[in-house]
Image 1 (cartoon, helix red, strand yellow):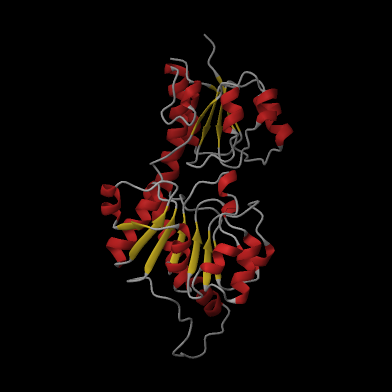
Image 2 (cartoon, helix red, strand yellow):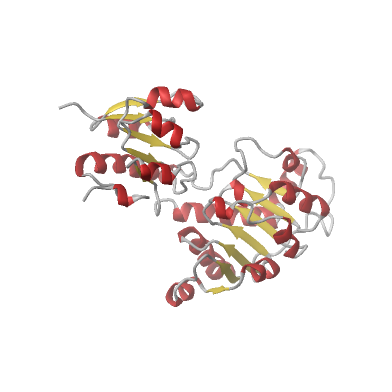
Length: 327
């Protein structure tokens, strides 16, 4: 019996390829070439499944050209690279990698918050440039994290992890807004209080964005929302770039309408809004919130195991559209 054919669309750990090769006929992109849509289709059209990352777009055009495709396993918790409606219409399963990256991403979110609030990167650049010649009482004076108000927009697993770190580790008052309010037990565990979105923007000293990206959340943080924030506030985005109107953010940072921002994600990444690159009061990192070796290996393993589970048992471990799975 022939093994199912799998495309691994981006470079991944060699042990992941070895694990998949025990079950599938694997074509892999270990050279990590940046394929365009036509190049992806050319390699995917004869495949039964795909191992993808967030940069690999699976849309109606790809699906129409690849009728053998039955599953796309994303090595990410986010899946805005999937046109899930089109996949469901064609009976193609999508899977992601929740849970395994929660704590690592929450750690990084808090690290980015602290670097932004305390002006760590800005002061390091100053030092490295040889500009530090004497001490001054107000040298790179930032804002306190301990005892301040932490605002969280989007309160899933990662948001809850950030809330616990802020409340328990730094004595922060935690307020949040979410599409649906958490139950009382979860709120108590996170020491978090639900507020309206406008109040969240008005009261947060440090606002962290952790909501999933969709058409409904596109530019949910724009000039009107930023205008509600304190001039001493910081904004941190570890969710997806399209959630923030970057042009509005650049203008607000330039005008001092908020103190600083920390961004791990960008619209159109890996391209970065050139306005952000000119500002000293923004910390920029290249979408690395989940990037610890153990976590990335766990993500790769779960994506691979979703493929194995599907072709061996007809289901996925973490399905996004389980309605396509035949009973």
